[in-house]
Image 1 (cartoon, each protein chain N blue to C red):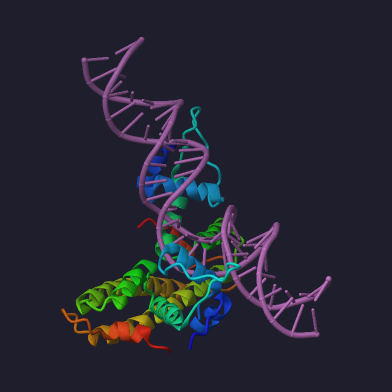
Image 2: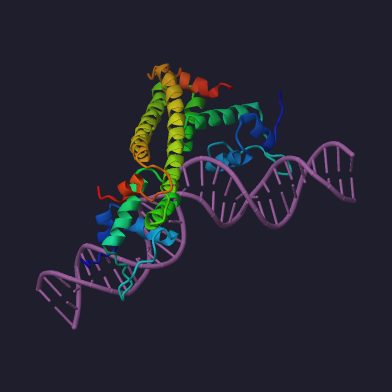
Length: 134
Length: 134
DNA sequence: TTTGACCTTACCATGGTGTTAAGGTCTAGC
DNA sequence: GCTAGACCTTAACACCATGGTAAGGTCAAA
């Protein structure tokens, strides 16, 4: 059970890249890893769990700074779930805001595109609209 | 009609910041502006129109590189509207992809948040889920 | 011993904007 | 004519997360 992985294997096991793992360590997101005599980083299964945690949080769009907080809460048996939920809700509302911003763009843009023939003629409503004062 | 604006006024008139305007000029998005003897940039109404064009395209989420193409097409009376529409459709599909990515995150995250009491106890499904292997 | 896959650090690039610094210019009021 | 303050200039750095490259050290198998 004391299987130790070098960074490439840890990357494969966690779904991150070696580059990201080093970066996270430098940012302080991960503690400095133990090294071999020749300087290679070594990862045990606990470390791999942390890396997976980070990847899954990144997949949900959390910032590295949020993830730092989430990791600290994860490791803190005295945590209040309130704190975790607060971070999640905050992120959720940013996601919602981003979605509605994008939907707004999408609506305007698809209306414009529908009114551009998209053929060989120079006439195009998209350009016309962009050129218009508000 | 030959009213010339310095960069601050041009910024106000276009809705951009002076910083952005200088940046766009440096990127080659805008031609190098004429200057006063003392080096101040001067903008005429045609320049202001271009700046507004850029702002409106930014508001629709186009990248500066897309905007460069759009500006060239705008200035080209021989353009084919096909080319404009192609850029718009491409951007539109990126917007759609981004929206569905965000919606996916939103769904998972809100499910998780619903199952986290968010009180004083340490128990929290959000952390549990992040800690789980896929 | 050599090869090739792995590891190390250090630096630069991306995209779009903001910030700061250190300085020059213009204009209005005295 | 001088000064204050608002404007302008360039330059360099920060943000965020990641990718890429370079130049070199290490390891294992052939």
